Length: 327
Image 1 (cartoon, rainbow, N blue to C red):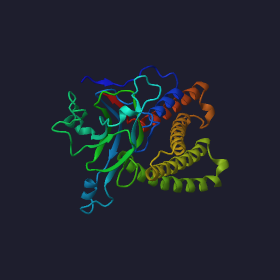
Image 2: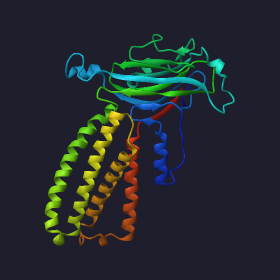
Image 3: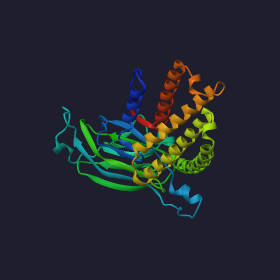
């Protein structure tokens, strides 16, 4: 069946619009918890990918420890999934027609083996999701969604990115799905691609706190004799403290609670942006008198634009794994 990518176009009129659009793309995604309440259901005989989860499996963990793995298995929890007629949709079926309808499946499929598992020409067979070589696959976890709310927890055996897919292999349209898909790594909810950042922010926190205390203690004694650049360095160091401590706290709360703490995320991102621009401004004025007056009005406007660009880059990189593709 021909692919129908879900795309959107148009120019970005402002940095604020870019930020809002990016956050809207991933509003329903909280770490490794994907809320299905507002997801558009695929049409008849359509397979739709919605998100990528990043997994480290128990088997890989076992290589570094005991044969059973030191931390336990990665798991997926299909939580309270249920089919309902979509509100205000003319093609929505009656509730009675959903009884016994078993053609909607929610699956996790390894991304690097996706096309070795899924047959792009015939992924539906007998009103069910069908894989190359059969109706089941060892590397795929699939859950049938029906009219009654149901849950299921399963182990994920292999490491790597998994695509969350929703498949409708029946003839009903105008459907909605409620519930959530929660993926948990051996250490918690933090995605595998974010796990090492926690240790990085912890180390950076120790470095910045020690540096800030020592530098500030020395700077206070000679404050009246310091150049403006040296005073700016004091500000930069303390901004680094805010960025690293907020970043560590964000990842720790993300890992234990399963949802991204937006306040800490914005604190980390703004601190990174402010620190980066402050360093650039310091380098610009360094050849001159060492004061901010060396930067012209146009220079300040350029720095402001640069600050917006850095902030947008940081936000976009944080949400670069949003996906929504249909076939």
